[in-house]
Length: 247
Image (cartoon, rainbow, N blue to C red):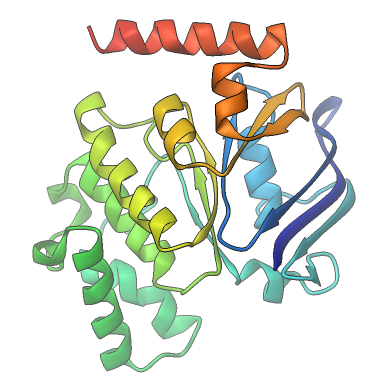
């Protein structure tokens, strides 16, 4: 089943063209990693898919629903996890997870709490339901953010560089949760600089540059035998940066 279809989507901020005729499809259960240099349009692409940015041209379909005609219905099929957690600081972990199901989905409290507790166990934080975000590490906050997005039972998960604001030793615990979701066959698009993760977990990798997807291929091909010098140069640079940060 086709979960997302983008047809020639364009997005500009003033005179700056950030997305330029971007087209692709994502099938049910696929994990797509989106890689490429800063400023290539990766985060903007995700924000357009979920309606946080309005596109200037083209069309997006989510499970066959046009976001232009039935935006609310389409956007509710997706959950998004950001770089910066975006948790409510004055609410406990459990309250952060139950807020949207109670208000948006009108779930009864007992159901919302049960579901939240199950999700917290799934991300390894069953003992943190009464904690406040300020009492958690960055990795724990991001795992709560993932559980919160999952609490709305989305069909598709979008991750915008979910580990970029974490200390290196906390990256693994967040990637581990995303790997588990991949094994559960949740459809995902993940903007990431973690090349090992992209190589191991993705079904396909999009390489973006200057607002276009210039490569859409399987991980083995892009990482073992890149089809252009541009991709080769990017991967070499990232590899060197990663080596430096782990020394």
